[in-house]
Image (cartoon, rainbow, N blue to C red; front, side, top):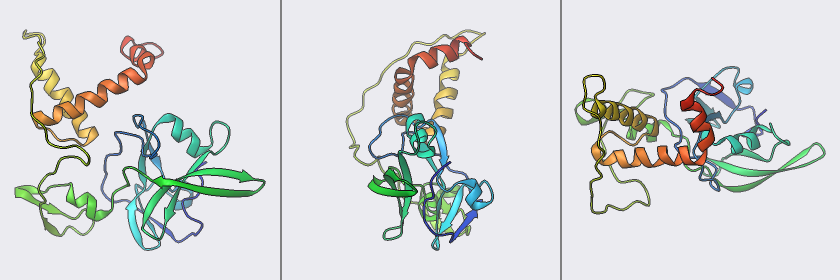
Amino acid sequence: MTLPATDTWDLKGHQGPKYTVGPYCSNPQCHRIAEHAHHIVRRSQLNGDYPWVELHGAVVGNLTGLCVECHNDITGMVGGHRAAIRWAIADNTFQWCDVLSEGNTIHYHPVGPLEPQPPTPETLAARAPGPQGSEHCPFCGQQQRRRPAAPPVGRRRSNRKTWTVRVPDETVEDGANVLDTLVGEIGVLLGVGGDSGARYYTLVPSMTYCLQDGQRFLDAIRGVGG
């Protein structure tokens, strides 16, 4: 069971729009691929399955991406709770905390803010373009001016090179169409966009995921244990 994100019951669940978590674990000390969408405030505390939550008057996403190991640390599945996600009222952020239990007392030691933070209605609206270059707030529906796309934080623009892949061009299998479809759908999951330049940021984390858990990947494509 997940430890509480706050010590008050001043909580309210919201349905709100869906959003994508990941692609990496939000523990600021972890760089593994996120495999689970974790409810920060547990369902039992909200009396329902809510992807958004209102804490102390602030509405924020209730889902965050975690790798298997960090998810186990949060839920206490293996060896008890080693970590918790706590709400910091001072700056309205979720903080990753190490956990130390002394009898019935739990001590939280902040490590750092989740990376990335779950969205707010404003930040989600900024990345959800509406028709004809406009944007709509996912909660109030108010039209907003679309912000120009920017490169990811810490990633500067660089010279472009092309990397060619030979694909089958046959009646039974149109390789180019297969690749376009797969890369496009994975890009939606990762939230990296659909243009040709974004394909790199779709393929690299996908291949990294396969390498990090190679045996599970091989078993999956071979149908082992299915």
